[in-house]
Amino acid sequence: QLNEASAEINKLELQLDDARSNYRKILTESARKLNAQSSQLGSCIEKARPYYEARRLAKEAQQETQKAALRFERAVSMHTAAREMVYVAEQGLMADGKNTLDPTWQEMLNHATGKVNEAEEERLRSEREHMRVTKACQEAEARVQTLQKSLKKAIIKSKPYFELKAQFNHILEEHKTTVLQLEEAVSKVKTRYSVALRNLEQISEEIHAQRGTRVTCPSLRSPPVGAELSERPVVKKGERCGSDSVSVFSLQTIASDLERYDSVDHLGDLSDVSSMTGEEREGEKGREEERRDRASDIRKQEFSKTHHRSFSL
Image (cartoon, rainbow, N blue to C red; front, side, top):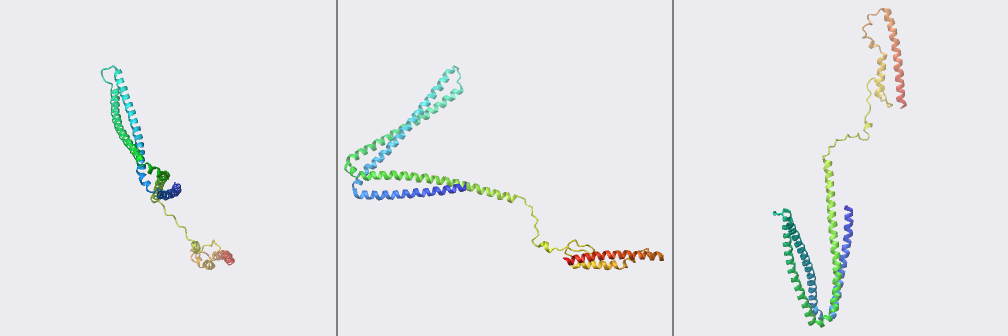
């Protein structure tokens, strides 16, 4: 709506500018031509001017007389209709045949009587107005006749000037009407534009109000780019490394574990070692050495695999 109103305003304002420009051009041209005509004809124009002014006033009085006659005829018609309504109400009351008056017919009669009084006042007022303007029109026409007789020569000589002036006045009135119509159209479209703009501002304010009252939960921020590279896995003691990137610390941990398994210090705390006999002790010692050798071989194999994997990376 805003775009349509804006485009229409621009179009109408262009038309209005053109109409005003044409009006000014015609006004300037008419003034130039009338001045030239006046310089040719001389003083006869000023002598004949009262006659043409009286003709203008007589024409206006004649138009007022016609309007007053129409108002008087309308008032007479309203008065006649009101009297007929009174007659109908009276006939209704007489046809009832009862001693008591019917409230409905009585109300209708009162209403009709009021209308008759109003119509009578309007008829008298319009009649007086019609008589007044008729008298003024007759006086204006009489003055025209008097001036026409006394200024006959000047009127005939100045006739081209006043005819040209009447033509220009008619053209200027047409252009003036066009300008007024365009001004009214521009005013209406600007009003419509203002209403549409206020509606748009109201909608925008409502949207901002809804956004302000809406409860929003703070979103979790994602880690910045490159943060995952700075986090390195911590390999604890005794854990196997699950990734391909094995650190030096993990290699040292595995080596220390191998040394611990190679030693037999951890077997000294067993409570049943001292209670064994010599043969049992010898047999148990042999079995322990075999278990230790197998464990050592397994750890060496795991170390070699892990070490080989780290070097391959």
